[in-house]
Image 1 (cartoon, rainbow, N blue to C red):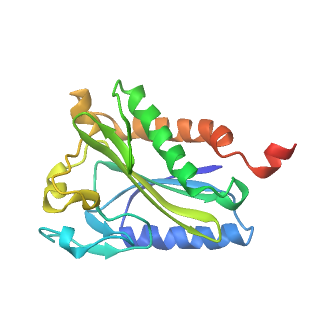
Image 2 (image 1 turned 120 degrees about the vertical axis):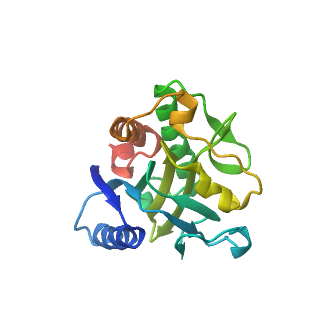
Image 3 (image 1 turned 180 degrees about the horizontal axis):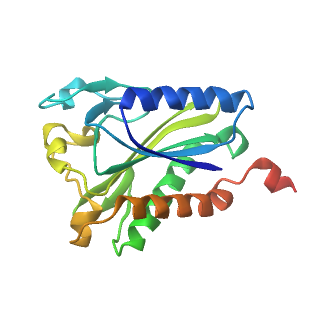
Length: 211
């Protein structure tokens, strides 16, 4: 598993990189990867999204191939795009979503924040609001898109939409929940560590299972 820290990247540039990586992985020209980055401010709408959930389109809006509705990406939010061979890791999309939630729940716990799953809703939640959004797409059983974890995010951008299509959905950040600034580099390190540590047990490669 290759971890890549891309810094701050425009949404379209990152999307193109995902597509290139998916194609290369399908051809056997690269290994699985976890891309970690921040975006410049943008709203993205998934396959099930509606323009009715945009209250004030003050920034760029991009329609994309992931599942889910509308969300915000911007500085202070850690975005992770795992490019994984789900075809060799059980072919279970729901289980993959639960895996991503588990990674982020454990990251939050590292900072003393209690978070959890919400029945019927994908993502990671706290008593003060939604901490992380998750939306993925699968091509030829290769996963792309991923998760967005609010670290030091400007939450005012969420007030201009119905996040994830939920009216009045409260959002939260790690920094607010910790009552202190949280360093993005530290969050990246925790995400990379938990992702690598859990993927082998939650999503073992078929070759690892049969050996």
